[in-house]
Image (cartoon, rainbow, N blue to C red; front, side):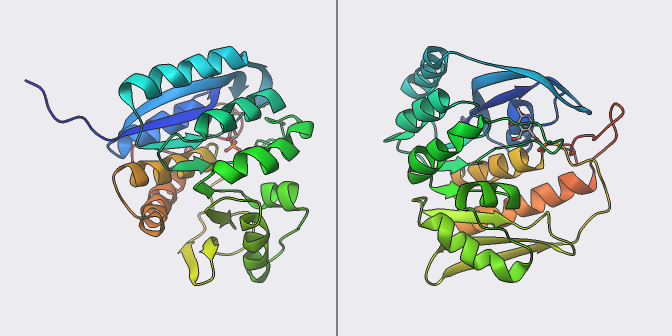
Length: 262
Ligand code: PLP
């Protein structure tokens, strides 16, 4: 007996050996949200609850081959990108995504919660110039907003101007994540004049939040693959990440992961 195939979502990201972020978080979120998750591994990290102890990039050729294997046979209804590590990989992935024919959610990963760089400093300009223009949606946190636009955002009132500056870099939509501000966790989705949506959730006093950015972007891509419009996909993803943060649990001696089984 066979059943109908679920929508297919591809993550192009780094592996987290600790299972909390990166490819591992992406695939867990996708399973929980009822889509078929697939992966193009860009880098392998040695990582645990204490931080990233090291990482090794894959050759561009290996990234290209994984992508072609998936897209040319199985096909994708949405793509999510995460850790891309180097100029060469940002360029390669940007090229592959041009004309992929499916929505692309770009999580412009720069630095992990522990402060470990996951993208070479000199590759930020390539993300700005090559990757953002092929994004349907970019999902920067406030550190990444600063890295990409040079702007600092210190309160909610500054989020709209930051979103406008990011939109000028070429993505169709931007989600500015205000989670690092005090108070409610407020995110702003902006797609241009008249396309402004705010999403709010209570702040949980839980330090086990490893993998939040990866999970949110994957949840949005999953919603898009299921045919949701972007503002609705962000709303359902926000609900998912809020539950996952509420259930985040201790593992190891440091910061534990969000929960995908809530
Ligand atoms: N490791 C990998 C491979 C990632 O892709 C990411 C985030 O995108 C992280 C670690 C960082 O996760 P966090 O900042 O939630 O700790």
